[in-house]
Image (cartoon, rainbow, N blue to C red; front, side):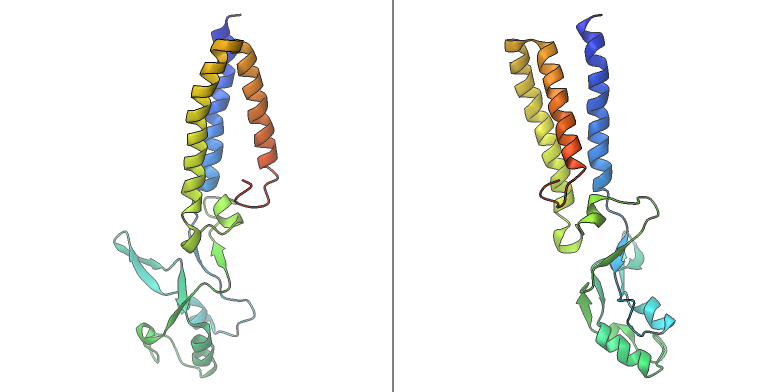
Length: 178
């Protein structure tokens, strides 16, 4: 069995490792959570998230909602959004009660696990970038180590290290640890 045959499975593992890290960083559709104990009519619950133009179409805002206190007052007064109240005149606020995430494409990602949206949206792409910086540095370092200590030894040691860190990553409790 040649060294090329021995290294082939390791190379396929490296490709899978890259896909495994980038898919969990996908950003699912999200919007501001309205507390379940908020006494809003169905109409006001549907109208609680302002619309904004994104990609040439009107979609729900991902980082803002109408002021909940105002919506509660309108709902208690039996006013209807759009008919009795001009929504463009209602103040907005940040997502004070967190976010809800669509589960249409992904059940769980690092984005919804650690709410890497809005003010923290820079963290998910940074995670992927740091992964590939590590791949780049690892390629140079493992090449130098292979010349000095032999390819097979370095291959199996680096595969062991990668497996160890992937296992530790499963138990990440924060974005920084991930």
